[in-house]
Length: 484
Ligand code: ATP
Ligand code: MG
Ligand code: MG
Ligand code: MG
Image (cartoon, rainbow, N blue to C red; front, top):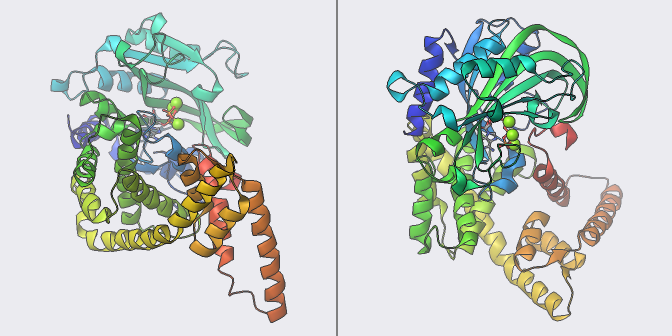
């Protein structure tokens, strides 16, 4: 089943069941806490909090999402994209647990002929909040447990888990509540028996049903927050990963092999002359390329331009990683003029505006690749020399002075130096690098003071980029900027 078809089935199913179809918001949403929309509920947040009255009691959408916190997972796990689409159904003071669980069961296990997704009921596992994790649920979420049992899910395929997995909040003050997740068992070829608690690769998480009931604050972690009190109404917020369902229904191994993504891998094979599926290190690169090209396409499509800060830096990083991964696959020529149109052709069925805007999108992407190629050409030899001499002297790491020189003279962001050094088995003296950066900053400040002008210091921008780049890399999947 094609991804676009699954998406259609989703919207049809919930429209038939009284939900208003709401188009995806752009990835850039006006929320000061978020870099990008990272879940389907984000545009509905004011309704959940009771700050605005929703024009509908039930809604459904297929929301474009970007989770920068998942960048490092891409290509290594089978299930994380930086860009992905989240199917959602939402109820504001309307149906609650019973309705949400019934809809989910019907859609997941309903036959294809009847508009369902046709999963074998015996392959479905579910999780609920387990006992002893939340004062309001001393025995766990019994209600959700009983509802799943009533759908016919056997007790041994229902697992109780902790707040980390079965309580959902945005990572900031706002709505929260226990959740219940649906997993599909992919069989013994994919890992160990024992349910999602044991192996999240074999048991693939496809859908999270969140039962929003309370307002929380003082959020420090997934499982560390304080409850303020109940929400004005009990709400349903669910999110299903469209690409994850697609990979299962298309019978492929991972998210990068679905119809919307795989053609970019094929184009990369042609460019490089290497084959996908023969060497794990190359395969990770192929997947990174396909994922990042698609994310970049969608981000530029929604108005992001490469830059040295915040959102622009995320885009820059994605584009650069795609280009670098192609170099590691042996391709020195420009790659985006080949790969980007392939990605656009796969995505335009669901996003026709990509075709219309492709002139603008491609101009931005290709210019960024050119600029990056110049940076790489200038810095790579220097880096290689530094690596060789570090190795010759028996050092396990590259000196902070080398990293600083690369940054200062050749515009290498520290994350690039770290990545390239790591490929050669070396770490980098980051502390030394930061000390030199700090000294330079102090010098620049003194200089600017002397000249009574503070605007000519372009290093300041690179510093921001470096700090942000690191923060983005290590932020949890909630992407809370205020934590970064
Ligand atoms: P995981 O544990 O696999 O990282 P999650 O628990 O972080 O997923 P949720 O926050 O529950 O994910 O999001 C709802 C759904 O969105 C998930 O059940 C999954 O199907 C999908 N999803 C989440 N992150 C990604 C991603 N990086 N790429 C593709 N789909 C995703
Ligand atoms: Mg999860
Ligand atoms: Mg989840
Ligand atoms: Mg996650």
